[in-house]
Length: 485
Image (cartoon, rainbow, N blue to C red; front, side):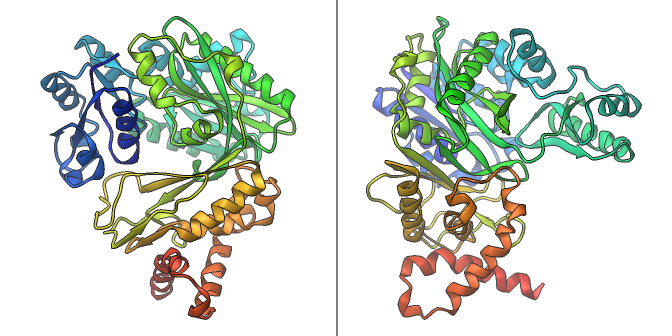
């Protein structure tokens, strides 16, 4: 087992990894920016090293500073969490060159899956179902028009090196192609240093379903079943659940086998996620995220597999503790991403000081957070405050329990998206499991959030608990500000 691990990340995921380390008797090192000096993860670690100013480019994205911190502290491994360095093959290779274990997949698998074009070719060769399209970088807009004509509009332009919803644009007709291609290429170059773009058929309003995979260095690889991540805005997830309402038992097993096949084709080990689009009973491999996902806790609470622990064991050269037949998901789990965002202002980030903070608790409730009362959320990073994870025996009970937990959650001083989650949990289509990636705009969920807040405000204060008021206070303030602008 590794003796000391540096966590090259921040916030709730840094604490999550450190907790797994502590249970295994592994010492931890936190690297932090000036903006995170008082952050909870810094207090939790056994050692800490400042690596620069607040902007991520000068701290958490500085490869040399992180490697230097690992060498100075005698860290044997680096866990990248998700985001920042998690899918950076150059960083993983730099770890290897310095004799540090990168707690993630091999560099070769990261490079293969980091290129959507190369990964698609590999998947086609072994029989994994992929979205109709081409496996070549587009040379110019005329060639793009020819390809789009062959597969049929609408189509999607995608940056080969893209991720996180960046570098994706839908094109409805040939008149839009030239401008769209130039836009995506420029964005891809600026964001990823690679302007390669390819074309796929646009699957209208699919469901987004992903499979958790994990394997060891000896080639033993399993899946831990699916998570549905279809409640999204700007291609970024807000709510996840497992199991998916859309899959039959037969499809569930079939797609799981495809996920394992995809991972084995890449000679993958450690934790990763194979993402699929699902529509009208058909599924298509989309991409593989070569890291631990934000929504991994709902897999943990339904399967009993501690994914962070398995990551550390695999990185230490140990065998995976599970066989495929050991994985039997139980119950239903939902994760709500609690963000410092204003849902009434197009989910704009709203960093501020938390003046009141109380997390929900009770049966089936888990909260992964990295904040506390009095902490100021920095403006430099992702807006996530916490992840609310709820488990129950079935989906109805999980929804009811999530409603209760959201009602208890108190966050004062920071505009947040708790009212958004409350609206969704009470929405007919969500409750019936009839939703897809267009759910938010199709049902005008943001408008419903406004009405929900107005209704709560008009009720007698005597009928509202302090927690309910705390949950909507920030949005009421935001609504009043928006009306004045």
